[in-house]
Amino acid sequence: MRIIGANKTFDVDVNLVGSKSESNRILMIGYYGGFTPRVTNLSGSDDTKLLKELLNSFSYPSYPLYPKVIDCANAGTVLRFLATALAFRDGEWILTGSDRMLKRPIGDLVDALRNIGADIEYMEQEGFPPLKIHGVGTDRVCSPDRVCPSDVHVNISRSSQFASSLLLALPFVGTRRATSKIHLDGDLSSVPYIDMTIDVMRKFGIDVYRDGRDIFVQPSEYQDIEYTVESDWTCASYWYEMVAFSENGRARLRNLHLDSKQGDAIVAKWFEQFGVKSVQDGNDIIIEKTNSIIRNHLSFDFINNPDLYPTIAATCFGLGVKGEFTGLRNLVHKESDRVAAMTMELSKSNNFDSHNDHRIAMALAPLAMKIGAIEINNADVVSKSYPGFWTEFQKITPNRSSKHQQCE
View (tube, rainbow, N blue to C red):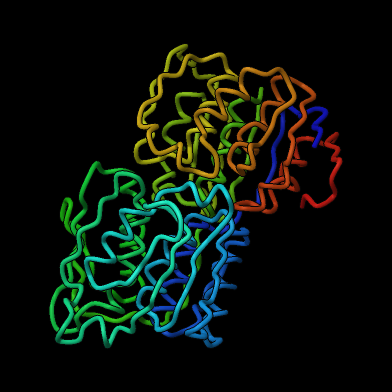
């Protein structure tokens, strides 16, 4: 895709996409609760569509002699959430994904599942997909000869999603007569995503709370309620970047809240340092460029917000700010090695590669406001999390052209 130019003065209304993280958790809650969620603004991302499709496919029988293959493509959340779901569903399953997905670790989740009775084998490399899962029903998990999952330990050093995967399932597989507990082992990372899981579970009727490294789930069941998904804060970060690069930019971000439970809502505070002000206006947020003086050296810790790294790195580059970044250790396990990818791309002039990573593509796009004409290869990958990104982006780039017409 070629972006010829971008306006530096604009006032636009922006349609974001429903939070992918929130949407995927709600789909799992519906699965475990036995109902179809009555949800508004469900994410239209590729990952959420895939999870919904795969969960629906479970209504078809699995043949014991021929394990059913579940292909999660490059959707890490989908594979991690389904590993737990299939471990406690009768049948034989092969859980796999793209070549990149097979390099993303899952051993800590498998260890936790095995410790509470799951039967899982590695088909290739130890600690990585694909997995062969011999699913057992919850009646057998909690039978007298097995340990009912009332005390689960999981290491979240590599991903907080391991804890969320188990946590979402506990009301379904845990004991109905006593409190279930998850203990978080290892280095804590992305804890706000775990807290978001807890918040969504509460809204669907589960009595759950976190006390430090321990999460407690009281006997309770998921309730079928009406729910509206908030817009995605990570996707909003690219608009903060655009406003930061503008001369007098202003954008209204629809269905977004400054007091959001999404961890990446911290982007509003972070971008104050780049001269971007955020104001709540009803159910929307208005962001605009200010005349604040931007320091030439800023520090950011991404241990709880790894998805914001590409946005912040590109913003520092575009504004000529020296950025000092910490908390990057898990970025190697994303859709690409994001530190290596951004380092490579920001050393170029104007012809960029997305590395098949939606967040890399969207973080690089606003640089057209600083550089002028740029090229982004494999730009369609944005559909993984923000299918309408290029349509919305065109509101400030009237001269956008594309070699591929698949972009929305």
